[in-house]
Length: 214
Image (cartoon, rainbow, N blue to C red; front, side, top):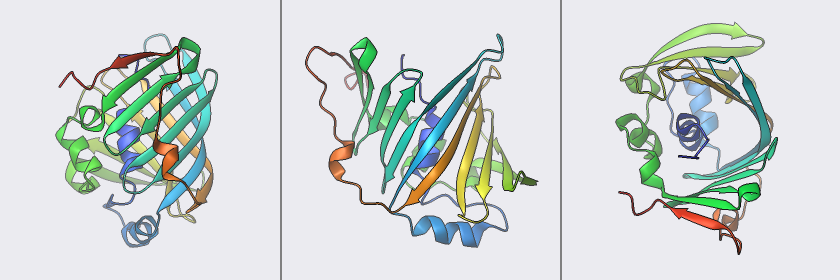
């Protein structure tokens, strides 16, 4: 499947308003996230292949809107547009003239993911959380899934103590591959139109419809 975005990272971002931290930061972070309706940020994503040690760095912009709408646009080194709507997800590759279509629920088929996307996720229920203290001015948390999956055997999140937000997430899969996303230039509650989360494939684009594969 060509879908390149880390599902865990996607779900963690989509559920940002409902995640509960098993840590002393709980109260302040929860209040901050509960008050967020939208946010925009630049992102840098580093994909590391454990076998070859090769690294790919991708950059772009992300726009989130409650309850679970996401507009994720990769700009470099190649363009990709990921749009998560209420029921449909589009993954569009302009250079390949290819658009992949999914139902949102198809991408969150594990028990953990269902909890996240439904807004019922609690880190202390799905993970063993270890506060590893200060790391470059951020609070680092280690997440060990209680039910490991191929795509997620270990994760780390870094929390900005001032903004009370996740600013970096690292996911490690069964093969030791790393997927790290860092957010910067975060804007809280900007005006965001619903049309940003709608997508119509341009003419001449091949559409791979996976909504029937249920």
